[in-house]
Length: 178
Image (cartoon, rainbow, N blue to C red; front, side, top):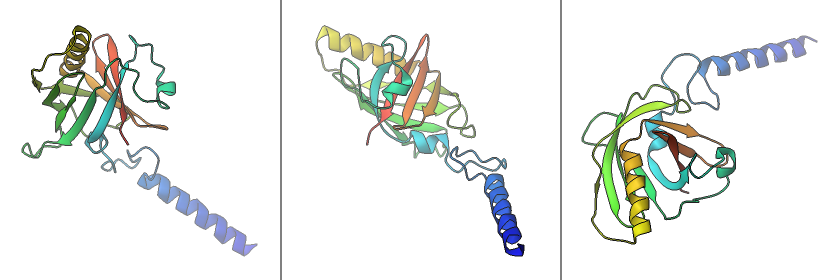
């Protein structure tokens, strides 16, 4: 009987310790200390453009299972800006239907949970100047414009990690490349 009491007490104390220290699925600890994994840590990497949530009628839950539904391939790579010395500033680069591009974004904060909408400010986006079909160029203009006017970012997790970029009247959806 005494052995069971000690066992129950040990399990209870261990559970309380794990809960208090924030060892949870969400990397934002409950104890109020710094997050274990920050939004920049998750954003850094390669992403494949899936499409526009409203315009393409994408169901985010179903999109976790498949790759791009976009008319043309486009990808995004996010990297730390090593010259800024500030984890809020990130470099972006990638390729769209015809051209390659690069630029930067600044996160409104790095302290919020990566599952919450976080404000962003986009810098100028530079691109190569190759010509393509009218359809490919129209897609690219819309895609790059979306990146340049992005308002917020949010990460969804599940079978795949999804990056959601809120733009006026819609969202751009990216899936983490493996």
